Image 1 (tube, one colour):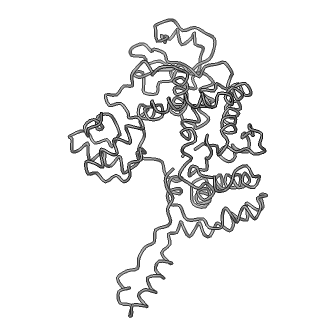
Image 2 (cartoon, helix red, strand yellow; image 1 turned 90 degrees about the horizontal axis):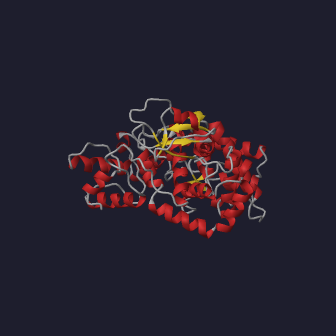
Image 3 (cartoon, one colour; image 1 turned 90 degrees about the vertical axis):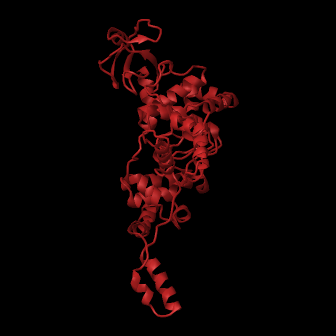
Length: 415
């Protein structure tokens, strides 16, 4: 389902040195304009050539001509959306970094406020769908910071770009048609469709096809509006998890202790009874024996030296939301923290823990103060920030990782 970066227009090239021999300033200017018009990138030209077909496909699928014209009349080429759709990120975030900024003190505090502010709606959602309200609020917090961040892309334009030039173009074209149908039905205004390059949008980031299947009008105003209606967004998320196989009353899982040097089976999919895990030496954190007939998998996100978890089918339901175990663990852990639980008892196997969002923002300010040109300090760590971190690490004689960890943060003066 999901997230990101600002779109850009196509870059244009320039003519060769022969242009300098064109006689007359007027001719030179005209030649430059011609060069600019001819030097539009092939990808941008491809977008222009395929847009008419895309518009025709939408109308044939039942989208009104009015909506098609409003959404696809002037679609700029978006280099970032196309690039994100055709390449995998080079930098892989360690699990302890991922959890540090997704489940930080600020998000926990904000989540508890949301639980109080929307208590009545959450009670109704929990009663209707049988989904733990803390899980629903955790999804809301991770996906959009409780509605504060919707995404960097105008979704119809992003989908048109990746539907013309990206990987899985046919899939993205179908998602474009779905989102135009959402506008046609009057559920969401075209101007409100801000989201990810891949098409996810709304306060809990639904793909358009998921929106069609599972979005609900919980506030009963006649519209399924996951952008502007908190009740619709929360209830739709609960409806999604119910359809993903959530079992009411069952936990997502819990932290356990593995014996020193454990080399036994593990993995979310390798489920056996809790009693069987007990026979393999797995124990509750307090050392008590594990017993029970429920099927669980043993999750070791950082290997046997880090925190370990027995995870049940509800963890799998959360996993489907973004198809990543690290994501499912973040949602599960945030939900536990919202209901009053503490941090994991076993530490991550690293001497350089990750940074919260507040610390990431401060790290960027420290890098700028030290003279590293990383662009704007916005708390979002991208390639420019990682490059600046790498240069700072080299200056301090540290291994160059480009990673936003506590070590470089403190070396630059962070507290």
